Each structure stands twice: as structure tokens, then as C-alpha cells.
Image 1 (cartoon, one colour):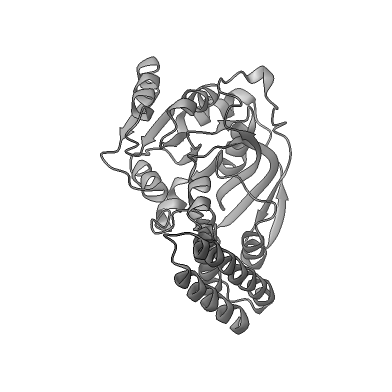
Image 2: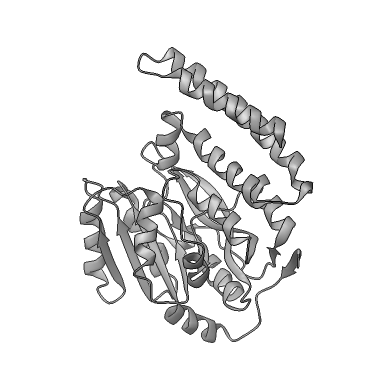
Amino acid sequence: METTIIAPKEHPASDWRDRMRRELTMIIPAYRCGRYLRAAVDSVLYTPVGNILIAEDGSGDDTLAAAYDCEKRHPGRIRVLAGKSTRGPGSNVNRAVQAVETAYFAKLDGDDVLIPGFLEAAFRLIAGNPEIAVISGRDLRIEADEVLDFIPERLPKAPGDRPARVMSGTDAYRFIVHWDPNPCSSGAAYRTEAFRAVGGFDEEIIWGEDWEIWLRFAQSWAVAYCDELSALYRQHPGSVTATETRRNRICYGYDAVFRRAAKLCPDPELKPLLRICFLRLAKSYCGAALRQFRSPSGDSLVYFRQAMRALSSGLSA
């Protein structure tokens, strides 16, 4: 199989909701997002999900208190996994997956908000098609001060009946490397068996770990994308993306993904795409080097070396 289009299987809604309650766990990674956490949690409570794990990552601020407040409000449904120190995004989720006892789990970052209806549709697709390791939708970006309270009537809703694009082999690798449309990590549903089989998120990757794992899934599983809104993706100064951008380190995430792709994708059809990716990456490293050069504490030489390495990889691809 290369690419197929599938629609959610028709069964009584009550059957799927009951299965989802029993078979899916929601992991909410939480790091310095106390202000936003309640809206994220409430958006999950709106679904049938029966088990919610808040994986607090040693924030050192009000995040843990906000997490425990959520647990106190729903003690039979929410459990807090408190981090003694900051592990990082990949390690924090991997730790939480160790506590998952269901066949499927989903992830919603603690500063995002789940779109009503998406997770139910995603669960029907992944639970009804055993070849799928992960399924994701797309995001709707919001600013830091938007949607601080979850009010479902004011949010867009996922229709829940749109078919998903299921990919394997070369088609899957091409989609993952190109990454346009960009699947949203919040609201993505995973098959627990598949996640554990590939070793979970790469803990060395600070940004892009939820992108890179799709490449390892594609070695033995199918991956799926549904063109529906899955989550409101919050843009704020404390997010991992914003922090890594300020540190000029986003290019390292792209580098990790492209090098993994070059290692795992033997099909010569993908070489031109990888060549373009590495050449664009070299340009990004050069831009970061110039910004570092203008910074009193910057080390531009490191970035220029990375640019030359990416250029060499592009020319030899």
C-alpha cells in the first residue's frame, strides 16, 4: 500500500464513545503553562476520554499547582505526573507513555486547546484501521491572550466525517519530509504499541521530535493525515517553538529530521527532495550564523560549520 483514502467506519456513536473512554488516554505535557492549562484540560474533559495524564515537566512556576487543581476537580479521571526536574519535551512524553495502560493515547500540549469533535473522529479512524500508527489534523493558530477559557459553543467544530489520507512506503516518506500541510502535534492520536516499538520520541531533539517520529513509524506502519482542525495552537513567548527561535536553534530540529530521512529513505525518488531540504537548511544555518555574529554572546562559527555540513549533505544527496 502507498496511499489510500479512508473514512470513519459507521457504527453507533455510543459504541465509539464507550470504546474511546476505555481505550484512549490523553497525555497533556505541561511546562510553564499554568495560565493556559485549565482551558486545555477542559477541552479534553469535553470528550469521552476516561484517562487524562498531566505530565508536568519541572516548570518551577504555577504550572504544577494548576495541574493539581485540575486533578482535585476530577480525581477519578485526571492524574498528575509531577516532574522533579525539567526533562525536555520528548523525555517528558516518553515518561508519561510508560504510565499509559490503554491501546491508544493522544497528546495535547498544555498551552493548546482541542477542537471539539476531532479526537472522536481520529479515534474511530485509528481504532478501525490496525495498520495506522499515528493520525493527526491541522492547527488553527491563536495568540497568547486568546481562548483562555474553553467555551465549545464559541469554537469551530470538526465535522468528523472527512476521510483521512493513509500513507505508507515512499508516499509516506515524501509527505513527512515535505511536511506541507503541516500535521499538528496537538490532538494527534497514537497507537501505543507502535509508539513503544519505535522507541518513543527522540529525547535528543528539543524541537521537532513529534515530526521525526513519523519517519520511524513509516518503516513498519502507515501514517495518516486528516484535513480537519485538531487544535488551537497557541503562540506565546514561553512556548518551545518561540524559545528555540530566540535561541536560533530551530534549524537543529530540521537538521535532525532531514538526516533521519536520508538514513531511512532508500528510494532514489526522494533524493531531489532531500537535496532541496539540505540546501535550504544550509541557508537557514547561515542566517542563524549572521544573527549570532551580531550578538555579543553569539558563536557564529558553530553555525557556519553546520551550514557547510548541510551544504555538503545536499550536494551529495
